[in-house]
Structures are given as structure tokens and as C-alpha cells.
Length: 67
Image (cartoon, rainbow, N blue to C red; front, side, top):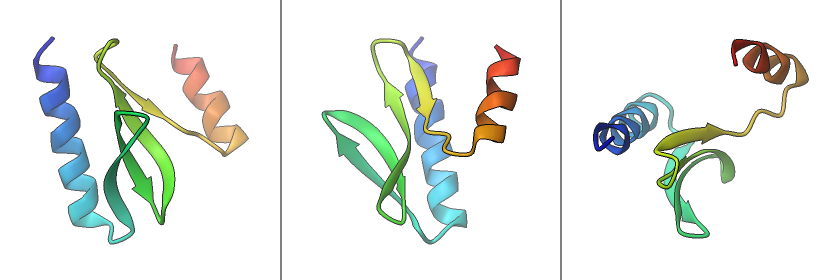
């Protein structure tokens, strides 16, 4: 789905515009989003999906319930 990478770009632009600590980067060739220098999200082209790092156990559990 070609639109998924475009949607990822829109989300990144919006996050960067609203939050000063957000920056776009690459990690091991994958486009990523960092907050205050730490990885928080990325885009996996092979899966056409955005991925997130969830450190908060409550947020992780709530997210896994959605699957």
C-alpha cells in the first residue's frame, strides 16, 4: 500500500510541528522518530507499518488488548 509511507510522513511532520523534542532520523536504515534523542517509533517498509516503542507497562498492555 503506497499510501502507508505517505501517512507515516504526515504523522512525523505533525509530531515534529507540535513537539519540540521530536526529530526524524534513521536507525539501521529504517526511518525513525526520536524524542529527546531516544527512539519512540519507526516505519518498517517490508510490513508497510509503523512501529512503536512502549516503555510504560500499562500502555503496552492496553495496546496489546487492541490486537
